Structures are given as structure tokens and as C-alpha cells.
Image 1 (cartoon, rainbow, N blue to C red):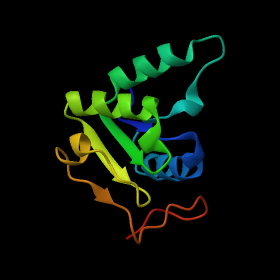
Image 2: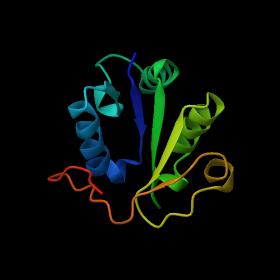
Image 3: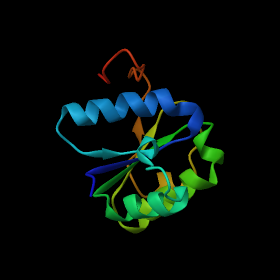
Image 4: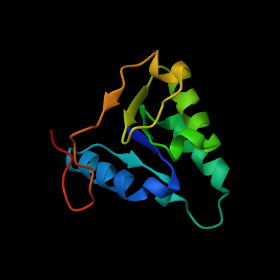
Length: 119
């Protein structure tokens, strides 16, 4: 079981990686889709990891807002009341998600791969 499941669009991989590294520096276990073992079904592994996670961090961007995978993972986090949405660009996050959890607006916060996430 991981403390944190990170959901993101493939195009935002560098930002997801930076956030995963930051969480790991805080001694939190992190699952993201770089951890799919060979021979296992992608959707089966994701379903197991999502179901076992204590927290679902969704990186909302213009890319992820149109991803059925990300929306499904966000819905599961919301259903379990463990969703932490993080907006990483000017994406218009769906009202169903943003209206129920505080949106962590990342404007002014660097999520570059060569820097830590800071205020």
C-alpha cells in the first residue's frame, strides 16, 4: 500500500516525477504508473494501487482534464474522500471535482524536474 497515488497525463510526466520525488523526500511512499511490473495488466495494476492508496493526488492540467484515466482516478479519490487535486496550469477543472475539494492552485510554484516544489 502506498501513502500517495499520483494521477497525471502522460504529457505532464516531468511534473509528476518532481512531485513524487518531493513526497519521497518526506518519507511518504508514492505510487505512479512508472511502477507497472512486467507481465501485469496496466489497468489491473492501476486499479489495485488506486484501491490501496491512502491519498490520491491528481495533477490537473489542460492535458489531464481530457484524460478518461485521470478523470476516473479522480472520481475514485473523490468517492473515497481522499482526493487532493492540484492544478498545474490554467486548466478548467470540472465543477464536480473542484467544487468538493479545495483546489491547490500551483501558480507561482515551480514543479520543474530540477527544482523542489516550493512556495
